[in-house]
Length: 392
Image (cartoon, rainbow, N blue to C red; front, side, top):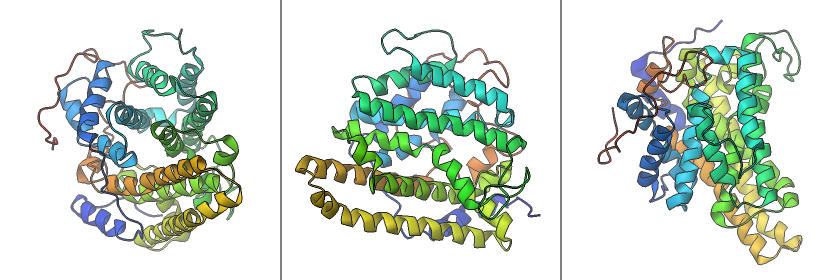
């Protein structure tokens, strides 16, 4: 049995050393609207009561999710980038709800997921605005309406499908944590007793949904002024390229967040699963997962190079060529931007690991009512961040 621990003073050098294993670049191509989006999203989340005080705002801001959005959407600015950053920010606030007791309570997770799903079913014009659902759900309702407003039905259906896959993955993860759902034990990752180490492929099948990449990719279409036809979006090779994008982001995230997840004992990490199954040193498992990421990225670029000829052969018009090229760029931005952000954020350095060690949770991780009542004081107006300085 491996001991899941690492020394705090070794973590940052370890992250940089591990990141050097990737053959693809860490993007620095940041949207010029990133700083404005940073302030916008903090004010937006504050308006719904996500933060209870300035210390919570400072802790959130140190994670620089705006940088992630700015790297995901480097050609977006203004209201579009604000919207993309709101989506990214809400993602992480939602994800942090499950780091404590809630993540091990499948029935409570199912209730929360069902509440979010119900919002996606509300009538766009006559939904339950101001219904007192609390900061998490009310902010999601506002986000959902703004994202979907004026979009084509085919895009809205696709976006909702990806959201449902993302949301339901949290319930499955909770079932696995508690042993309610038998975890994979065989080499193919399809059987075995509860609690047995799973295969990397089995973990990846779930993480492709829980990583939340597909809804982020979906925003490339309205931001770029196009909508891909379902046959093109869901056919070969774009569907497989989207899956490769999922995989690269998952593997990158699992390596970047490794020390954090070792500290909290989370098993939904491909490096940890590979380490448990193969034995040996932890860094051997890291190298194996980095190799998988590199192979996916190489395949992606090789396929992207063949795409124009494939489209021409299929009789695609110039507008389709242009739309697909923009969509491929969007996938590339997500892969390289995720790595670029991982090396800059405080979420995965010493501060981020210490912030969730010893049972501590993020200040915004108590918004569901499933762990403790929402504390009074949330929702008060917070002044904008001064200058451009990052809290320590």
